[in-house]
Image (cartoon, rainbow, N blue to C red; front, side):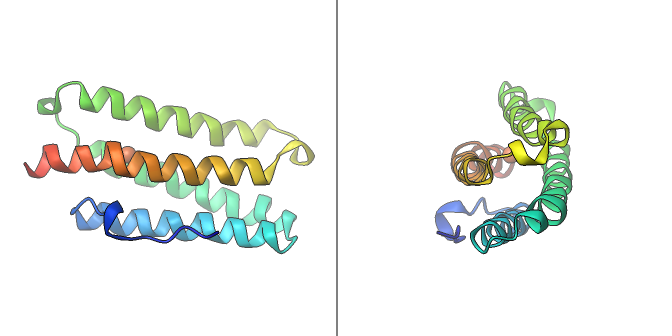
Length: 128
Ligand SMILES: [Fe+2]
Protein backbone atom coordinates (compact mmCIF):
# COMPACT_ATOMS: atom_id res chain seq x y z
CA UNK A 1 0.00 0.00 0.00
CA UNK A 2 1.50 3.32 -1.01
CA UNK A 3 1.72 6.13 1.49
CA UNK A 4 -0.73 8.91 0.74
CA UNK A 5 -0.14 12.39 2.04
CA UNK A 6 -3.12 13.91 3.79
CA UNK A 7 -3.95 16.73 6.19
CA UNK A 8 -3.19 14.71 9.31
CA UNK A 9 0.47 14.91 8.18
CA UNK A 10 0.43 18.65 7.60
CA UNK A 11 2.74 20.70 9.79
CA UNK A 12 1.57 23.99 8.36
CA UNK A 13 5.10 24.92 7.33
CA UNK A 14 5.02 24.79 3.55
CA UNK A 15 8.69 24.00 2.99
CA UNK A 16 8.54 21.04 5.36
CA UNK A 17 5.25 19.76 4.01
CA UNK A 18 6.57 19.83 0.43
CA UNK A 19 9.69 17.94 1.48
CA UNK A 20 7.58 15.35 3.32
CA UNK A 21 5.54 14.86 0.15
CA UNK A 22 8.75 14.29 -1.80
CA UNK A 23 9.94 11.76 0.81
CA UNK A 24 6.65 9.89 0.59
CA UNK A 25 6.99 9.88 -3.19
CA UNK A 26 10.47 8.37 -2.96
CA UNK A 27 9.37 5.68 -0.50
CA UNK A 28 6.46 4.82 -2.80
CA UNK A 29 8.86 4.61 -5.75
CA UNK A 30 11.04 2.25 -3.73
CA UNK A 31 8.04 0.10 -2.89
CA UNK A 32 6.91 0.05 -6.53
CA UNK A 33 10.36 -1.05 -7.67
CA UNK A 34 10.40 -3.78 -5.05
CA UNK A 35 6.85 -4.93 -5.83
CA UNK A 36 7.60 -5.19 -9.55
CA UNK A 37 10.74 -7.22 -9.00
CA UNK A 38 13.17 -4.43 -9.88
CA UNK A 39 15.41 -5.12 -6.94
CA UNK A 40 18.55 -3.78 -8.53
CA UNK A 41 16.90 -0.46 -9.46
CA UNK A 42 15.48 -0.21 -5.95
CA UNK A 43 18.89 -0.71 -4.35
CA UNK A 44 21.13 1.14 -6.79
CA UNK A 45 18.89 3.94 -8.00
CA UNK A 46 16.01 4.72 -5.65
CA UNK A 47 17.65 4.00 -2.30
CA UNK A 48 20.64 6.35 -2.81
CA UNK A 49 18.24 9.11 -3.92
CA UNK A 50 16.09 8.56 -0.87
CA UNK A 51 19.09 8.51 1.40
CA UNK A 52 20.43 11.81 0.00
CA UNK A 53 17.03 13.45 0.23
CA UNK A 54 16.60 12.36 3.84
CA UNK A 55 19.86 14.09 4.78
CA UNK A 56 18.85 17.24 2.93
CA UNK A 57 15.43 17.24 4.60
CA UNK A 58 16.74 16.66 8.12
CA UNK A 59 19.23 19.52 7.61
CA UNK A 60 16.34 21.78 6.59
CA UNK A 61 14.40 20.96 9.76
CA UNK A 62 17.40 21.18 12.04
CA UNK A 63 18.27 24.62 10.67
CA UNK A 64 14.87 25.75 11.95
CA UNK A 65 15.60 24.63 15.50
CA UNK A 66 16.72 27.43 17.74
CA UNK A 67 17.76 27.21 21.37
CA UNK A 68 14.37 28.40 22.50
CA UNK A 69 12.87 25.01 21.67
CA UNK A 70 14.03 23.52 24.97
CA UNK A 71 14.53 19.76 24.94
CA UNK A 72 12.61 19.35 21.71
CA UNK A 73 15.64 20.03 19.49
CA UNK A 74 17.78 17.41 21.18
CA UNK A 75 15.06 14.76 21.09
CA UNK A 76 14.26 15.60 17.49
CA UNK A 77 17.90 15.42 16.38
CA UNK A 78 18.32 12.08 18.14
CA UNK A 79 15.36 10.64 16.23
CA UNK A 80 16.87 11.88 12.96
CA UNK A 81 20.17 10.26 13.90
CA UNK A 82 18.58 6.86 14.57
CA UNK A 83 16.88 6.95 11.18
CA UNK A 84 20.01 8.16 9.38
CA UNK A 85 22.05 5.35 10.99
CA UNK A 86 19.49 2.78 9.86
CA UNK A 87 19.88 3.96 6.27
CA UNK A 88 23.63 4.54 6.33
CA UNK A 89 24.31 1.00 7.52
CA UNK A 90 22.87 -0.25 4.22
CA UNK A 91 25.91 1.13 2.42
CA UNK A 92 28.05 -1.44 4.19
CA UNK A 93 25.54 -4.27 3.94
CA UNK A 94 26.01 -6.79 1.12
CA UNK A 95 23.07 -6.14 -1.25
CA UNK A 96 21.87 -9.74 -1.10
CA UNK A 97 21.44 -9.38 2.66
CA UNK A 98 19.14 -6.36 2.45
CA UNK A 99 15.55 -7.28 3.24
CA UNK A 100 13.70 -4.70 1.14
CA UNK A 101 10.22 -5.54 2.40
CA UNK A 102 11.35 -5.11 5.99
CA UNK A 103 13.21 -1.90 5.14
CA UNK A 104 10.23 -0.38 3.35
CA UNK A 105 7.92 -1.21 6.24
CA UNK A 106 10.37 0.48 8.62
CA UNK A 107 10.72 3.61 6.46
CA UNK A 108 6.96 4.01 6.15
CA UNK A 109 6.21 3.48 9.79
CA UNK A 110 9.02 5.69 11.03
CA UNK A 111 8.22 8.57 8.70
CA UNK A 112 4.51 8.70 9.44
CA UNK A 113 5.01 8.45 13.18
CA UNK A 114 7.81 11.02 13.15
CA UNK A 115 5.83 13.52 11.11
CA UNK A 116 2.68 13.16 13.17
CA UNK A 117 4.39 13.47 16.53
CA UNK A 118 7.74 15.17 16.30
CA UNK A 119 7.56 17.34 13.17
CA UNK A 120 4.13 18.63 14.03
CA UNK A 121 5.37 19.44 17.52
CA UNK A 122 8.31 21.33 15.98
CA UNK A 123 5.94 23.32 13.80
CA UNK A 124 3.75 24.16 16.79
CA UNK A 125 6.78 25.37 18.75
CA UNK A 126 8.05 27.49 15.86
CA UNK A 127 4.80 29.02 14.75
CA UNK A 128 3.29 29.21 18.22
FE1 LIG B 1 11.92 15.65 11.70
